[in-house]
Length: 234
Ligand code: SF4
Image (cartoon, rainbow, N blue to C red; front, side, top):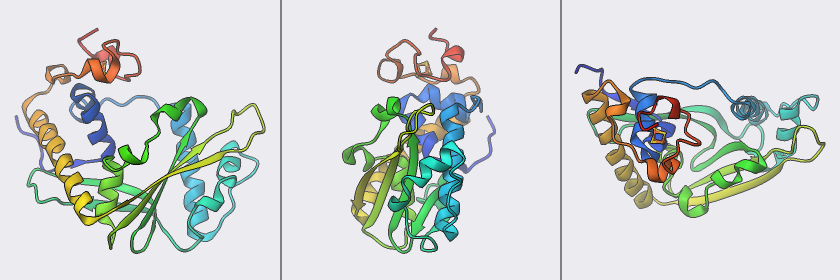
């Protein structure tokens, strides 16, 4: 099968394939996309306000729900004018058939990265611990791009208050400091996942031909998987 290589692989793609290769294949091979959820739209809006504030100190609009959310956590963001925002990242690990790419939210030269994530109370269970953040594809790929090591990477979880109430958003940063060796080892592990992705990408057209990981990924129920309706298990 002829498919264009090298394949550009994003951190979310690596995370999906690590959870369940078939789930990843629905996105990478079948290119299925799900409609954006309310949480995703909030995240996009919140990131715009973060970007404006980090770039030139623009205060988020307090008339908007997400403007108030970001307004509550400004103290956790880099000082205006000190960070590069929405920075495109490309990491070539030497493999001929793939490279890693992404877009990081706020980078303070030479070695500090801040990546906000907007969560509801109900999503807390998906938050990283410091241990799991160390092996997260986004953390590793962005850290590999920084100009100096060790890299201080902060996943800035912002817990949104309910829309119907006038509560304050809470910032709950999870921070790690990564050395050169840790980043290298992490990238080796990501290369192993990428190798599998490229194999299936170049060998099948139907994601249902890719092995699944149902027990661990969806408990064998499909619950929580955006692609369950397409998965031949059900
Ligand atoms: S429904 Fe379960 S087994 Fe099927 S793709 Fe989704 S996570 Fe994988």
